[in-house]
Amino acid sequence: MSKTQLVEFMAEESGLTKADASRALEALIKGVSKGLKEEKKVTITGFVTFTAKDKPATTGRNPKTGEAVQIPARTAVTIKAGSKLKEELN
Image 1 (tube, rainbow, N blue to C red):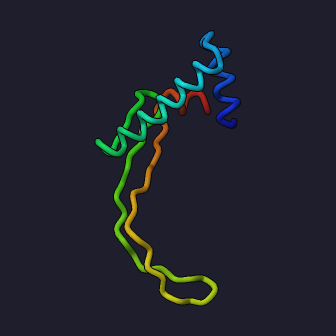
Image 2 (cartoon, one colour):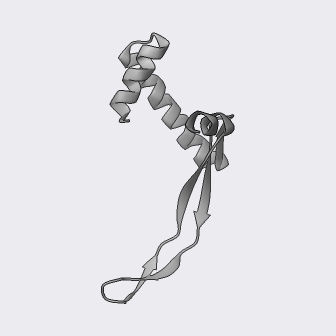
């Protein structure tokens, strides 16, 4: 499902206009991003938990040349499905 399709679905389900649904989705995205930056974790109970984890710099290898390549430190996001989401999918 694309972002546009999700906005359309949200508008239909909630009775909001597409513009309002789009703003609501953008607010959710900003809220999750802010929560991950500030607290490293965002939980929407029963649905999903986002967790930001700091990954240290490492040395990797270029698969074509075998040359060592420095991979910089970064922050990775993990996502864990909640119980209600798991029930919906199974």
